[in-house]
Length: 94
Image (cartoon, rainbow, N blue to C red; front, side):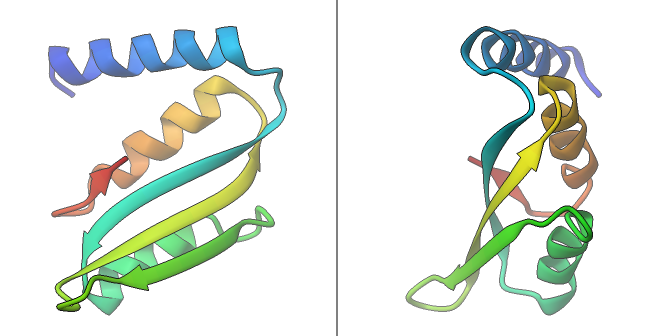
């Protein structure tokens, strides 16, 4: 992870810690190229967590928006998911 990403996650963790009482519901939003493998990889990352997952294809079906509402135990657990998913080529975290 580069310094820019590390600083971003550090700041996000602080903001989440200051604004949220954990455990809490958290809404993850991602955009991925419409590719069944990539979409499945995102969905599988939240298996067994009771996540509610909604996918929506873009108008031209080139990209898919994935919204995941799930109960997370801490700000660090949110950061860990973002880092885990950042390995998917072409994913954009919102």
